[in-house]
Image (tube, rainbow, N blue to C red; front, side, top):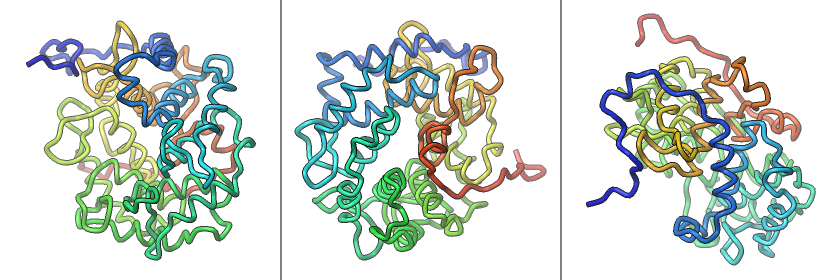
Length: 355
């Protein structure tokens, strides 16, 4: 059977070879090309989540220091985002799609990146978000009632971006307490109380608690070790035990470790090498693992992972690159401009004798 996810099989032993450099110009061209392609099979299959796709593409470009208004058609994008808003205040993943908290956060992030947040009726969106909170502090994703800690993060982040986190429209304390009840014996977090720990959910929980200034609900030492144990022989990170490494966890895990002050608890050099080997050296973009096809999701998270690892810091040719904020997944200068607050731990060195 043909494996359509693979572009070419990397040679044996490449995980130990010197990793390539970062293909900045190829990635820039890749993001622009993907954003302009509306007649491909991939576009049709992901049409329902275009809002998130636009966010991933814009963030990749923003972290590379590109001019979004000039290169990404900011005015047209902002107008499209507003057409995705519903009367109740929430945003859908594309025009004609139902509103959801996931795409509402993506829409706010896109408008913030484009410098167009003033076009958003903040009270209206805040009303939509607050209407999704339940009596136990959790949040529905939409009117159909699914509960997930991802939605807790989206709600808290959205309210912060709207400048209404402390407005009393949502119960921040109850939201944090619900997330705390999703903590497991291994220190990790699941999507609901009792659900399996997973690196993606852990970011949403740690990020939500950071925004809520409630990191005391995290067993920081135990969770730090669980996250560090996700590093595989390839240098990459997996989302849970016995799974393959995937570039996206370079973001989900590193961001959590950054918030907890424990980024140095993993082998950063090996992880950088893994991410760089996942690049497409011909067409640009970054794949989930070496030899697979690139996509916009992994391209953004690969760049964000390198940013958290300090790969671009002080390196010649990358002066215009922007660091990513580990809590809000936006460029640090934009987070500062918006006045977004979060709770972060000071860096903690790796304990003596630990490997």
